[in-house]
Amino acid sequence: MYWQWQDPFYPVSDVMNASSTLDCWSLDSWFSGFNQPDYADFKEDLIKDVTALRTRVPAARNDAATLAGLLHEWESLQDRLGHLGAYLGCLSAADATDEAVQVEEAWFSTLNAESSKIRTLVQAALAQLDEATWAHLLEDARLRQAEHAVRRMREAGRKQMTTEMEALAADLNVTGLHAWGRLYDTLSGRMTFPMTFPDGHTESVPMARRRALMSEPDRRLREAAFHAGQKPWQDQAVTLAASLNGIAGTRLGLDPRRGRSHFLDEPLFDGALTRASLEAMMEAIHTHIELPRRALRHAATLQGTPALHFFDLEAPQIAAPEAAALTWDQACATVEQSFSAAYPKLGAYFREILSHRWIEAQARPGKRPGAFCTGSRLRREERIYMTFHGTMHDMVTLAHEAGHAWHSCVLRPQRSWAADYPMTLAETASNFGEMILLTGLMADPNLPEGMKAHLLDQEMLRAHANLINIPMRYEFEKAFYTERRSGEVTPSRLNELMSEAQQKLYGNTLLANGTDPLFWASKMHFFITGVSFYNFPYVFGYLLSQALFARFKAEGASFLPHYEAFLAATGGASCEEIVKQTLGEDLTDTQFWARAVKSIEPALTAYEATTAAR
Ligand SMILES: [Zn+2]
Image (cartoon, rainbow, N blue to C red; front, side, top):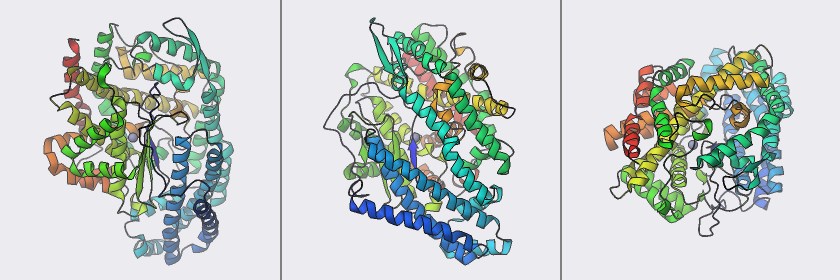
């Protein structure tokens, strides 16, 4: 399946120190090159097989043996689609200026639309099976260990519209739902704003750089970037509100036709999570909100202001010590040592990644910002994409992405239908990888005090993102979708809803005039059309990994088999079942989540103590 875990919560570094000594990845084992004969043959066969399979599904109705065969074929077809999609995703990230690849990606999205029509047909065929045929199907040897995936397809099939209407919706979404998202990308991608820098010079700044400027230690830079950068969003607010209303309106229009009574039903189904667990998690956050707020209060004290402004939230209060610039080799060695000391198998896997050249980290122009992990089920290989500028932050990103890759590696022996995990379970392994690195660094007696303070500060930034900022986005989206049910929501009302959500989560840790009412426009996540509620799965992953890591700290190496059992199970059952079976925890229990939230307290206290005297 086509998977690429984007990690958009990392601010993009502003610096581009070109360096030629860094490693670039190798994709040679996937294809000898873009549009080379092996690529062209692969593509041609794939198109042929997608088209052929689509015509064969309807004939398989109510015949268990034929349907099992088709399901089995479709699984491998999806591996091939995933292989090609991941390859193109890698090429276009590594060189965002390659127009031929962009054209190919656009073509690939139409092939994906064809594949989604097969899904609709398969789901419809599964939905209308009588109980006896269904039981017979589940016993078919070709579907062993695929029961969870097949059950979910049947459940989705029972709720979907007729195949003709689903096909129409898929076609219309290209020019409707997804076009609203593309409009957002196009508009925001072209935005620039004139900004006067603290030294007095004015220059035109691309919007893509604003976030990095707002993460600068110099508060004057942040403030200037925030205020000057608001204007394009304000100017385009009417258009962006139309886009947001269009996206939500499409979903709300389709929901009841797909048997869904609530806008959270779809993201919860996608996340393999129940409403009870989501609400238990959010309740625990709201109950213990003073804990992450303490970090913000401390940050305000450090910068000498009574509270923070929105533009202060992502800024490090403690910058990394100057002399701390890392080489790529140093960063790799440090990650490898931390992994090997705490979790030898992870260390060995990391060495394997490096020796195969599965990491693209070179800082060069033309690369898309951000970091992700992707891979090919066909080759059983992973790839990591990032850009290394020599900062501690980049090293943490490396550990994060290596955690993702390790998750996929643990799933390699599984069939693809037992390896397709939801977004809710995607960020656990990555956070776990990060925490192993950070814990290893903090335990090093030679770590300078300044670096320790910096790392604790980074940890508090992460707690803020997951326990305040992202829950705030969730609150906003809930309020917006609720109002959107009664009609379009105006830009000024969107501003109000956004300010209210910020006040609710931040309380008085934000200055009275410190909210960002236009955050609904500037945050790309609200305009992602492929998934709705692109927020709570991150909080879930963060808190679950906090809980897992707390157990790892308490139980030591004897916990690791449980951890791997958890990772290996992530594609085979609901979140509740997996966590119950492999860890013995109950996700619907507020106390479980409360413990996870409270697990930040030792780092918080250390943060306050280490940075107070500075
Ligand atoms: Zn991630």
